[in-house]
Image 1 (cartoon, helix red, strand yellow):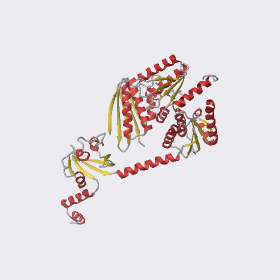
Image 2: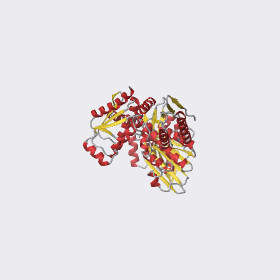
Image 3: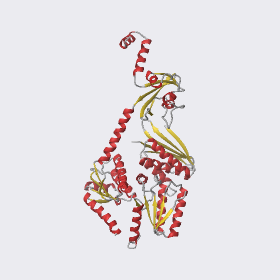
Image 4: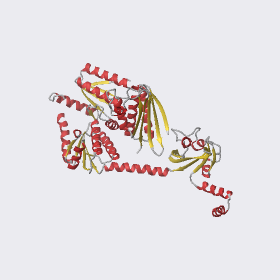
Amino acid sequence: MEIPILKIEDFLIVSFQTELSDDEINSLREEILDRIKATNARGLIIDITALKIIDSFMARSLSSIATTATLLGTRTVVVGMQPAVALTLVELGLRIKWNVQTALNLERGINLLREALKSEKDVVYE
Amino acid sequence: MSFREAVKKTKKQDGNMHKLEIYEKILDNVEEEIMLLDRDFHILWANKIVFEKYGEDIIMNFCYKITHGIDHICKPPYDICPIDKVLKTGKPTTIQHTHFDRKGNKIYVEVSAYPVYENDEITEFIHMSRDVTERVMTEEKLKEQQQAMLALSTPVLQIRDQILALPLIGTIDSARAAQIVEQLLNSIVDTQASVVILDITGVPVIDTAVANHLIKTIQAARMLGANTIITGISPANAQTLVTLGVDLSMMTTRGSLRSGVKLADEMLKLVVMEKR
Amino acid sequence: MSEDTLPVKNESDIISVRSFGRSSAANAGFGIVDQCRITTAISELARNAVVHGRGGSVTIKIVRNDKKGIEIICRDEGPGIVNLELALQGGYSTVGGLGIGLSGAKRLMDEFQITSSAGKGTTVIIRKWLK
């Protein structure tokens, strides 16, 4: 299942449309990281509007994509989480490493990245 | 012979004919559909109302064929067969079935099956069904009303373009807490809010459970990109929270709803300023 | 009671059993959020069975007696869990999430039972009731 990775200005946008198997998630992760290196994108937006379920594996995968991307210098935001999914994720427990920045939708995600990148010049990265 | 005379007569002598008349009178005048089935689901006998409902040609037909029009015992996605369960457990069982009338309206039917034993072996079953549509509808309606009341008691107010306020009043049990957080998350999506103010001035007791509900709400709201400010924690409740060892790093708090709104405005202003 | 058993031998089985779980939860009368909880719990158990249990099966039962709800039984014939207590505390979180999955499923459901012994596989039963 091909998941398109779009480039808009200096951001990459990945939209999860369907449910992915563990293998597919892993190869998508590789692909995203390759694209980041290739394009030097400053921001990555992962759109999960269509995801009806995020289990611990998916949560870990998203978290790991975000963390790795950030290490490569690309700020990451996950957008579009469904309320039911948000609630379930929280109830799954804090053991799931979820250090991911989230935003309500694509527009807010892009705004968030723009502001963060603007102030990055002045703020020491934590 | 009148009913009364028949009863009197039965009392005086062991009149089996009178007994039979009495039994038939009872069985033919109740509203329940009663059938006697053999172990292979054939109808051996049925009371009057069954004949009236399904026609004359019933005896020795399969119960499922007559009542459901199917060629196998009731099982999902259709209703579940109670007789199956009686065979497995040896005890009477009652199951709710959903039928449809000619107009497609739902009719809820409660079906009970009773085993008939002869020398410790089940030889026949009694199959009894009653219409419980009214009762079920009333239960469902009551549930709906309760939900509506819960929702009303927790109004989510949109006080600014991107700010929601949720004044909580009264005790919060888990049912209410679940309803509150669901309603709040849906409101965040609907109004695209970025700040939520949860005012708990009206909540008398904060225990670990309530504190955990609050933290859960804060975390879930953050997943949707919204920050939460908790306002109105009384000194007593503050003490409790500290004693309970609740993770307070999760909470942004302000003393009053008003100061919460002020903070929310500042949070949004920062965003607006950046844009210019 | 309506009951269906599906195999979980590989990754695509996890996806199938998830969507079957979701529709069963919907049929049982659960709302959207509970459907999500149930489906996620099923996913956790199914993944454990595939990844750690060498494959197994998931049985989903819609319960309609005096109590109404859903029951899921996940069985595998894998190596079994040696230290159940440790696993339930998430102590195996380094080994690809076995503990996280189990404790997560437990948190999302109303009832949780697990039997497992070394060499004999694992059976997990989880239930959620309509309120």
